[in-house]
Image (cartoon, rainbow, N blue to C red):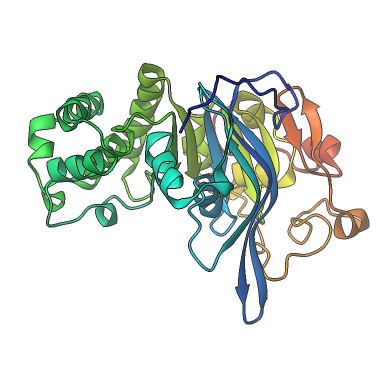
Length: 355
């Protein structure tokens, strides 16, 4: 994959700092499906850079475009989906790679060896007739990796994930709990030593205790193996415990992107604030819970102007007619809202994650 001389591209990132080491660069990234009733736009003109070594959380309601963003990063949107725009992978050594322009063979290599993915639902990811050792061997063989060396790495990864390597490798999927299968799937995704790990709702089917456990383990894995992680979730409080930076998707576009501490302390977009105010909090009375009224736009008929204006208590005529650009709140924080300077007054934060 990386045969050329080392190149260090200088790319302006999503928050405008311009001097970060970028590993994945997305420009005008869109995904659409042609349907009988029109074109379903499930990701629209997304611009964001993912920095080497960071954990970035991608948050939004169901149907916001999170999973499509994850699939698009690996050029893995299924037919008849159409992916447009540009995704550039910047390896540690070698020239930048045009992900959407790769032929089938190089793309297959990139998906496991450079950018790997953990999909939702560990049970459906494993062949029930194969034990876990066979799953690892099959993956190593398919990519011409030395199997004994790869199995040693698998054992180390499983141990790092607080699993007994010997027991897991000799077990079949039905013999392990959901949390154990999810951790085995993470180990499988990392066995070929990728630089980037994309995770689509990896903890959604797990209980709260196991979710918290896996979040802690992921942070340790990032540090030990020098990984970059993209963590897709609908659970904003959960990802604040893990991510260095958060991107909030609404109606197939980013509404707000920023460093986690600032996003939690000082969210600017009405939708981000609504997500925080809708978050269960044991310390807050039920009367303070504020569910988000209305529903997200139909992907076939996304309204003009700000896509959130139909649900936003701050919406004005400008919001219905004019699409808001991304504006800098600070050097590490951007928001797409015409009225972000007034959100503190208009939508006070009452419940949600600790601030």
